[in-house]
Image (cartoon, rainbow, N blue to C red; front, side, top):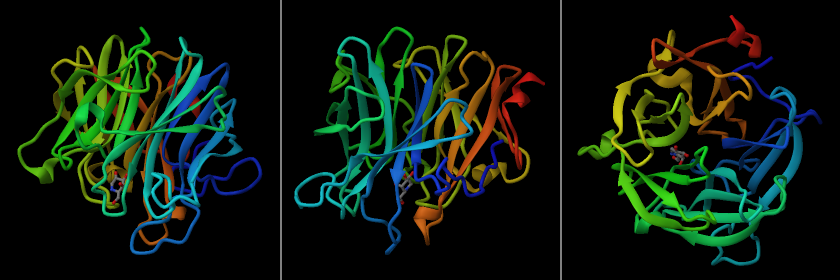
Length: 311
Ligand code: DGJ
């Protein structure tokens, strides 16, 4: 079963370190990538350890595949030097180049470097080679995610312009750069209403984006938006969460929405319950997301399993 907010251990009994994560489904196996934060928290941050990968056949039991993109310890100028920031890694597979491509938020400790790092591997469970970092479509980029469409086109969605805009840029066919196809999807005039923590998924031909507000490690209200095309007009719709603590996303912040393979109205909403005093002990909040009257709806469960989607 899933136990949202409880310590989640891997198959070796160790707490899973995959924060700000995302899941890739490849050849019958799920791969969960996320931030390894297994260091002491000092002034609200931990040094970069790297990107962890875990594999699973059933979504409940996860085997540690190790740190597949480690911090670079011997080069202070490297994006992945421990004193920097490496967050929210996401991986997609490029069928043309037969390469697994990871994008992640890389930053300086003051979050002003604001770039997206790119790493590649021939195997889903790495190791990944760091290619370098870019600013998607030339703009600053902080919280981010990737979305791959059914036709193979892929997009990076990132908090930009000091988080005032959530922008979407189409990637080049090799997924290693952005193209000039670029929109400002969720711009708001007040910076305090900016968006973070984007998670994008597709349901019955339409595109859905769940994001959070910007309150550091503290939780806030989630919002969903919908569009007919990735680079089209996005319309904000409201809070997808229901029930107790919905208005603070159950003390958590979105990171990914995982379509459950083989079930057309079954998604897992993945979120992080950050512990700002001990970030390594931040918990995972995975909850069922289904469509009710055409709108995505997330419901709290103390524990649940995939059979909730059959009810
Ligand atoms: C909120 C972001 O969503 C997190 O990924 C992280 O960057 C924190 N801010 C840092 O305060």
